[in-house]
Length: 273
Image 1: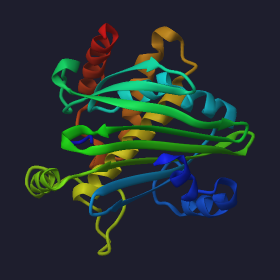
Image 2 (image 1 turned 180 degrees about the vertical axis):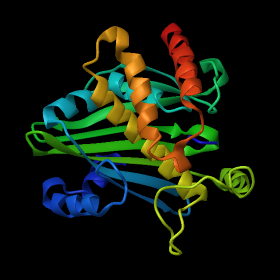
Image 3 (image 1 turned 90 degrees about the vertical axis):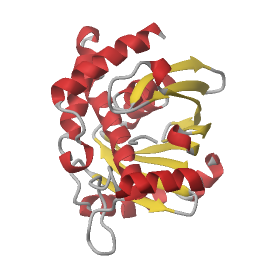
């Protein structure tokens, strides 16, 4: 049960350079390691997780990675619940991602839920990147699956990144998830604190774990992209696992050997697609 617009709307919520001082201050105050700040909200329909982060790479390097559908597939694949990701190149910076989402155990792509998502690099210029990935259907009966990212340079060697992950949940799916989080998933927690100073649980905990996993995928991808081709997959998997182990209470579901073995098997399945 782990995994679960529009450019104008997104842009209205975030005026890049004009607000970066406020965002940098929030990142510096964050208790989370890795120069990131995380928040989530739960509405009547939409569950939203959001990360603000500073990454120690120049903007051109970051935009070159994050503006590519192929790179998004590579980063998404590191998530334990993503069994495979393929893409079809489109035109005008639009492509189709085929994401296969399942349980944390090994599954072949034909056993997982297949999501068809539109990838769009809606704005790419010398100082600003905006990317959206979304589809009408999400995992586990959810709707309007959205991942959105913005990036702009802080200086020559550092880039600000904001990543949003949201999904809409209907009444029946919300009820089923709440039953799960009240029973078998009652130990699952998120990263932020509620009004009583306790870690958030339930749907907010779920979205926070997922937005963090995708962020760590991006971080692992950037840190290992210069590894030799023969070593790159292994290095990327090892780095993602090591990063996730900084948050064992929220993210640990598999031990290291099982995660690495499972993802290597799933990679072979992905190659066959």
